[in-house]
Length: 308
Ligand SMILES: *[C@@H]1O[C@H](CO)[C@@H](O)[C@H](O)[C@H]1NC(C)=O
Image 1 (cartoon, rainbow, N blue to C red):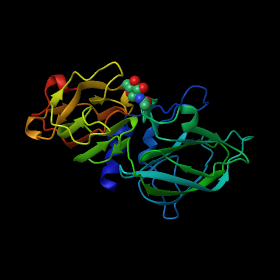
Image 2 (image 1 turned 90 degrees about the vertical axis):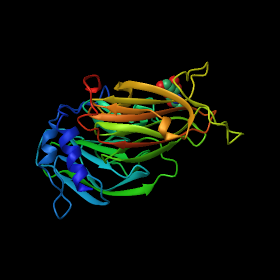
Image 3 (image 1 turned 90 degrees about the horizontal axis):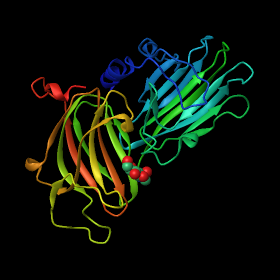
Image 4 (image 1 turned 30 degrees about the vertical axis):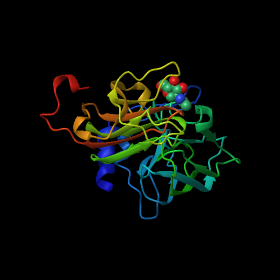
């Protein structure tokens, strides 16, 4: 897994020079490049920028930097993240601040986007200092972020990171460059996005979106169409790519609904930007599911118009 995380640091985080937050939060610009220099020590001490995909305890002790720092946590797509604060010594008087974010924030872009996450930003983003430190936090998807600025040397915090099974996964960041993903809405009204942090070739293997109703669990295959909108909005898939992580800022390459399990007839998409995404919009009127395969596009696959 480390190999892929290295790829994350290089491909995504290197490009990320600004880490700013939703309006009204007094954090400053941060240079993310320091992420690659800081490694977790044997005792679990981390530097200003750190990414982990392993359970265990991590500790940050300020060396007096005024930078905004980040601990980025990522699990498997069907996991959620549990973060427990074991120690918290961040005083308000010394200007210290720790924020827990339900998702990732990179270069002003949020994952999941505000249109896909079940809670609004004020609920997703909580700041702490002083006596009332954070206790336990459970994310809604496989990524979470602790952002902090602790100017006073010696102050800091210690957390225990753990991963739990997500019974009904929705939004997820994929760390791997190739794989097969199945997304479902479990009959619910909700929007789910899978973001892959690489340019990809995406092939829809099995689509059943906006067809199978709650009561009748099997319908005849109707084929795929892009005429997915109805008065209620409609259920559909969006195939997207973009430079940043936020699905709501990405470019939609196609919209698809219907049903087809014959993958020979299903479209393949070349997504040439840094990040690729498949988004499923569900009204709650249907049981939607999509299975797609993704793999790195070859040089021959990518034409001029696929470039970002
Ligand atoms: C899902 O997204 C659509 C369009 O992007 C939006 O109209 C709808 O309100 C969203 N649904 C939920 C449950 O957030």
